Length: 504
Image 1 (spheres, helix red, strand yellow):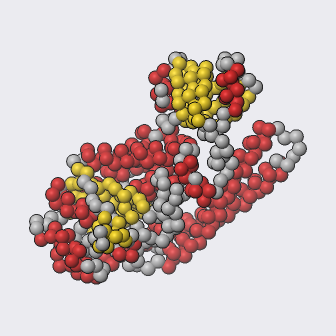
Image 2 (cartoon, one colour; image 1 turned 90 degrees about the vertical axis):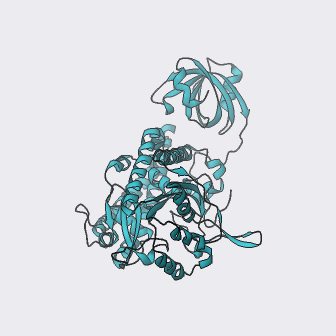
Image 3 (tube, helix red, strand yellow; image 1 turned 120 degrees about the horizontal axis):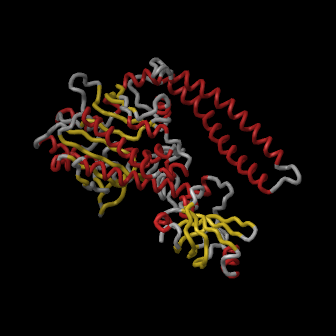
């Protein structure tokens, strides 16, 4: 029996196999929190209802020891998962001694060095189950809309986004690169099948340590024949709405576990604002308001609020730490204040980071020049004014990839779209209409100093039955980060690969 099926056998006996996440003891009682991969369950061992040997095993069992445990299933909405097990038998399968990740606070570097064990924690379990729902919802959406999944190669002989972020490798004596994107191959497959999507690992050799960057990540890249930019944005909006609603429907327990306020996620049913690049720049610089809110003034108010809150948090920490020095304090009260101090220190760290970031965001916003691409801080400033994803479209062609279609009526602009997630999360989707003008495409390949011979096959797509077509790429980990409201993408993938980290 797995924990997620306990609701089917309430009042009956069941046997679970899993690991001990936590333990506490009372007079004649041992409370074990057991996980088995499908869920978590409190198991109560009563000294009067089990053998002396079983009770001794329950008292000595350590964190992350594996066990087989039997008992009667009792419904209790107060417990995690809504059920608990009143134990009759317990067998230790594998002992765990000196487990390194304890309930005390650990630094990020320590946890990342022990990622193979950190995955067992409740928070990481919840995040990666949400990731699984997102993956399944992605397939469900595209298959339901008549797309077929196709696979692009991981070894490529040419760049897609530019040569500066390529991982080069040896391919039987010839240089080859790990794929930055399957998009070019996706275009070829769309000319054969109409609507396709690829879903696979991609690689960017960016020496960046921001909260949004990984060196290895998963991309979803649909390509659609006979779709213009407007139709492309329609697909993106339906797609994101479907995925988020699936998470809300299937992962309420996991979202609660990670403390995710779902208010903003529920607003995904509203129409996504579509904003031309020029208007987005005006919003960023505080020259245009959104629903009465000014980006620059909002940031200035946020800065003052963060200063005031930090002062209050520090005072609360000092007060509670002074109380902990009081002689004769009860064990329960000590535990309460210690937990609160840890929580306050986590908030302190977040506030201090906010106070470091906001002045930088303000400087970037005030100095931003029309025609530049948005940086992460610029996207953060803009999206803080919205509660739904927003679509910024019609970009300066100089900042977009060589394959992006130029506007026939005003060649200054490329028919691209970036979808920016709210709450300061920034770009999660980049896409647009693809260039069909053969001469302009050749011009852009030369402008980007790419080897023409490597793109002859790609130019064939314009020589033989070219049609208007569009597509986009979604970074899975950035989507998971926003849906879960995580401070860094490193928690969105089981084993992150990023600048400076390739282990475990």
